[in-house]
Structures are given as C-alpha cells and as structure tokens.
Image (tube, rainbow, N blue to C red):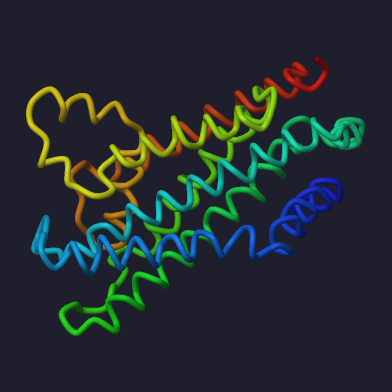
Length: 263
C-alpha cells in the first residue's frame, strides 16, 4: 500500500476494515456454507459419483468451483453494498469531493472487495484441504500451478468487484442487489461447470456454455489447483484479465459521469 497515494490508501483501508471488523457477517457465513457443500457434495455424493477428468476424486473436482463461487459472490457483494450503502446514506459524497481521481476511487473499492473475495477463496480452500486430509479415501489437495492459481483467483475476484461497482451504482434499493446476486450471478456460477465437467454436455448446450464467463473462471482456477483444464489455460486467463480491464474502465467512466451518484 505504500506505493499508493495517501487518499487511495485511506479509502482502501476504510473499506477493508469495514468487513474485517465484522467477521461474523463476512467470513462466518461462507465458512458454514462451504462446510455443508463439502459434506454433501464432496463426501456424501462424491463417494457415489466417483471421479472426473484424469481420475480426479469428485471432492477435489468441485473444490475450485466452490472457491470461485465464494470469491465472486463476496467480491460482488462487498463492492455493490459499499457503493449502494454510501449512496443510500449520502456519505459517498465525501469521497467524491476528495482529491482522489475517478480511477483512484474505483481502484480502492475494487481492491478492497477483491481482497475479500480472495480471503474467502482461501478459507474455502482450507476447508477443502481439511476434508481431504481427514477422509481416508482421498489424498490431500495440492496446488499444481501456484502462480497461475494466484493470478486467476485475484482476476476472478477483481472482475466481480468491478461488476459490483456497476451494480451498486445501478441499484435503486436493496432488493436490486439481491436480485443481481441471486438471479444472475449464482445461476451463472452453477451452470459454469462448478459441479460437472463441460464434457458432460452435448451439442448445442456445450457451445452455449462457452458463452458463460464462469466457465473460463472455474476452468482457470481448476487448472491452478489440479493441473486439469477443459479449455486452454492461457486463453481462460487472458479472457479473465481482458474482461477485468474492460469492466474496470466502465467503472471509471460511470463514476466520472456521476451515474447513480448525482441523480
């Protein structure tokens, strides 16, 4: 953070402390949810499903998808809620009148939210490791490509943090945020290859699935963890990085225009 401008550091610190100080609201729910996911899908159903890909046990196969689900949900939720809450209570005007540029302002919100997504992803990873460690039928989860995994996880979290800013500016009340999270993001994730391989789809459904950005995210993170991918890993990561840059540029443009801030 030392390389950032003072105002950017201050806003970034405030946004990070906002969720770090409330772990029961930010980190405990995904912890409990994913313990249940691993218990049901990984252990109970996984023992009956068997393996996918190159003989990968099902509990390991779903681990990267659950990491993506947690990262995108928390990255989006944090950014959208923070922006909307600031608009709702009219304290975001203090940020807008600060000497921060629109790019610096957007960066602080995106970075803080992406960090939350990454932290949740790490928590989910630890849960998966524990489940494979205590279960006698599975080998412990290892990371095949650590650098690739780190970059892809940050990109996934940052991309949906950028989308979160758009959602926070667009929302007219809290119900809008719920609609976006529950009826747009989660369906995309669940149909993005979290619980099944793309090879399980035939014909047109396989082709349609490739238009789902979650497919590339899950595949990238799965490759980082397991070294297994159904798509070209370089292509998946490239799509993620380009999409993140494009949506961040949209964030900066919307904030500069005052969309949702001056209406």
